[in-house]
Image (cartoon, rainbow, N blue to C red):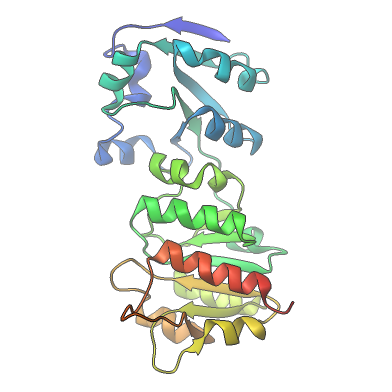
Amino acid sequence: MRLHEIDDPDDPRLADYRDLTDVALRRVLEPDEGLYIAESAKVIARALAAGHRPRSVLVQSKWIDDVAPLLTRTPDVEVFVVPVGVAERLTGYAVHRGALAAMHRPALRSVAETVSGARTVVVLEDIVDHTNVGAVFRNAAGLGADAVLVSPRCADPLYRRSVRVSMGTVFQVPWTRLVDPRSSAVELAEAGFHVAALALDDDAVELGDFADRRPERVALLLGGEGHGLSLGSLTDAHTVVTIPMSGGVDSLNVAAASAVALWALARGGR
């Protein structure tokens, strides 16, 4: 490793890590095929295993032994070693997991390539909370979804918080960003997917009934936290599916709903 000990948070070499809580700055630093930030040795390891390339690593001295084994295949990467106080002043928050990596974003795949061979696909429409996006990816990885598609206005799966909440599974599950969700719904249908919208509707099919007779290939549509799925997506869906609720509750958080639906679909047909 190329180690550089730095005790000045204003050092220009640390620009990729400065003020990570500033959303506007992140938009500048993280365009498509730009950069994203991986936090913690576990997440960095999963990013490297997925073939992503680090531009640099920021680490506190006590965490060097955890990070060093991960970088054996990238010996030329710059590793900036900083005191705890410098890390917190630099990023604007407490870096509890000791290490951050500025990673190069891979080029996005086409929808066709992303869903090739998939049996269950999750489609996220305008989910703006990074925590929910990360949680859905973790559910997708753990409950058998083969790919995730995100709408143009959906929160970034490679935003630091999304990556952290997903525990690095955003690198494990194939995903891409849609250009036009409505044309993508048509593309999915033409590829043999049954498009199922998870939503509240008087004519909706209960999830258990749908899962018992699930089609071979399912694209599960999940809508934004407040308004849910758009009218266009509901119109494009082959079936509207709902999770039966009780206790005067009409719906679940979108991440929780994704877990319930994916669990049921994974059991479908067994």
